[in-house]
Image (cartoon, rainbow, N blue to C red; front, side, top):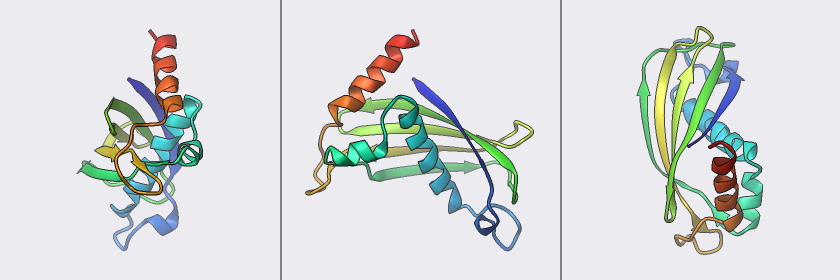
Amino acid sequence: MITFDFKFRVAYPDTDQMGTMHHANYVKYYEAARWELFRSIGVSYHSVEEAGVMCPVIRMNFKFIKTTHYDELLTVHTTLKTIKGVRIWFVYELFNEKNELINEAETELAFVGRDNWKPCPPPSFLIEAIHNHYSKNL
């Protein structure tokens, strides 16, 4: 498995009337964490798109455990769970400044052609980067 920790502060516009981070904003932070994980193994999302491949999210699951507020420093522990065929799965654990687990999530993405949106294999350079990362960390 490949893991990566992504840190961010809850921005004021991301909070709701109750003073907590609105649930819709978890999606954007998990997306940023996912692509930073790829960047950590040498692959940018831009390079995936340039290869003619898009990665739409096809499923999301969230478990909200605790709330978080404006200006809190959070850490997303992201794990590339598996890649199989034209699909890839990520698992997320979100921790607050006290290292308390406040949210768990999983996303499933598909690899599709940029021009036709039909399922396609992931770019070979992505698979190679994943394998190289595994080889170095055995």
